[in-house]
Image 1: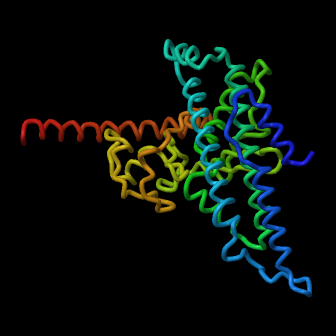
Image 2 (image 1 turned 60 degrees about the vertical axis):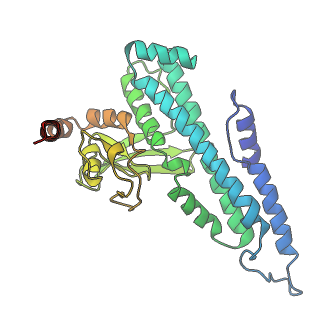
Length: 324
């Protein structure tokens, strides 16, 4: 079965109507552009244009704007649903039952796992669709504009494989699998998600449909150690929470939301990436279970630093209050 048909059947088979990539429509646009290219052959049968024409309707008006909007809708839908799922998994007591009732979900691990599987499938099949349609674009236009567009989309945080919630779902899968391993009844969300260590450095990896492989480096590029209390900035880079606060020139008491918009990511130097940072709770649980000695040692060190910063903060607040 061709991917286009497989993709359409998948999207039509969803219980809820979800945003997706107009794969068939975009392919039809490219066919029209391909015919226009063929009409520009000279009498030797060679193309007069080896790159996209200066006034190509596909480039300027239809293809890229449509694809960018669809990518934005897909990422937004995935992030929202993944956030709700993981919030439910981390909730406890009355709040957990309230979320179950509000979301009209069955209150069990099976329901959580199934929802996670559906989200992963949705994310990955759309990632593959986007990759294939951009590859088709470059083939039709004899260009690398599709690759350039993908890089631009990544810088705009529209690439679904960059989503921090995908990283959280990978950790969620491993955590549930380890929790229920004795029962042998817990299906995996991914075809092969696992935590590995290469020369002592941790990586979160998974194989997706045999065609997409993710390797997420879990070493903080500031302290050069395994991320502790991990947080993902909106650019997609992961740091220790305290290291991120230090890079943003804020205290842990004020938090990353207090960072100035001009503050940049230490890696990619993109500004304004701290306010929308995501705390990776599931990843934190996974690393705590997998690196117990390191985690305990780091916890003691961090606790001392947090107490020191909190003490300095409240002392400065008291001095400001009494006018000293």
